[in-house]
Image (cartoon, rainbow over all chains, first blue to last red; front, side, top):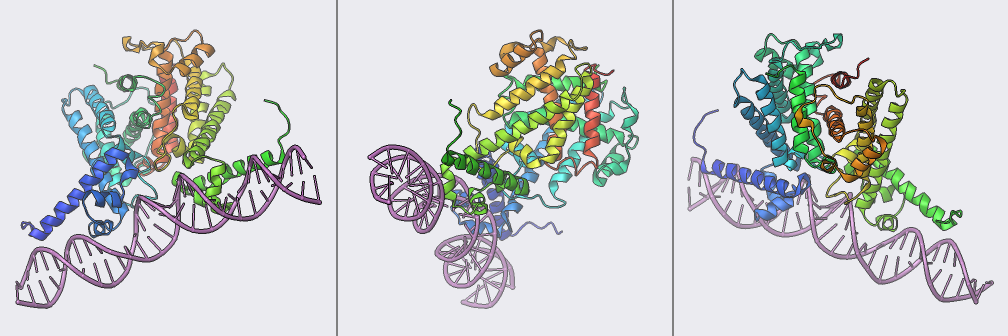
Length: 234
Length: 234
DNA sequence: ATCAGATATTGAACGCCGTGTAGTTTCTAT
DNA sequence: ATAGAAACTACACGGCGTTCAATATCTGAT
């Protein structure tokens, strides 16, 4: 882990690696996840497809890297939007998070499909990849937002959860950041995540737009209903 | 439209067409949407890939037919589950619809992806295909369920909609079946649709299971929260 | 019974794709 | 200057959707 400046070779390698990803992102935006073809990338870079294998062992590795980048970009955006509002305005923070989630998806429909849909033919995500990690980060962030609404009104006896009901990484993250929160808060956060995901996914995949003219408005109403049901309204 | 018995040729043609779809569905279930390959289908049927073009002009046409079948199967199931409860129990009807939606998705994950996700490489749904039609049917059904909760408590001034805000076919369907319902009910139905879709989509695509052990329980809680917020609880 | 025409099917070809594997060039570090 | 590593080319393989001329099969009328 010495932090010496990279040799020229290493620098070129990093540049090329970055360029591959950049070109792949352009192709992704232009033609969707399936347009990420090694031959197409190589063609744009005036290279041979085989040469790319010096940089990524396989196509799936490249896809994995792209997915990680996209997921990170999404989480960064939602958290930045959230943190633009003070901790004293939990409703605004949750609304901002949700709106950022949708606007990112609308801005990067191909990226959304890459992260949340079938990425590409035959691709299977690696075991402990970066995607579940980013998902945990997103969920932990949401849990923080939901935490502001705790304890929740209208809770029933069915809302008893155990930490074992969730991914250990996620549970650890939440327990560290919000020590006083019960595991049921994580369940609520996951449900909130799903609630936001639903309309956005339908919209990105074109199912909503064929039924309603203004998906953004529906989404806004849904978010407002959400904060209301959490008792976060001012 | 004479209803004579089909000639032997026509019968064979129908049989072959059906067999193609059947084999395609098997491949779909076995290997996901991308496994629907004309060559693979032909191989299983001991045919040539080219011969399939006598039955479907292109691969996309076959995918479209499969999508229509799947969507129909989904809507049939949800409506049957709903109608297993009397009109006097709107909460039970809505819960049944939602649970049927999820159980169908869990039973046919590949079908769910086919209908709601990226179906397959390069495939684009036809303009006025059967998918929007089935979606309208599903939404109209949901609107009927939501209608039982009308007029909604907690409605804000932002809930004013016009019939022009929705797809004409959907609007016509709803106006015919529920003449007394305002267009805002359709907006609510679409939101309910999205709310159900969210957790199910996350689960089918593997994002939920990596975070929580029991997605079904989360979904159940979400449905209960939904009926509660609609004021449908007994 | 025969045979023209419709229908169904084949097999080869084209151009894509991802994945590998030599063999060769280019550059870096010494 | 040169050994060795890194990067790249060229090519092969199998799979894919699609097209098309040629062929096999069946049908209906003669």
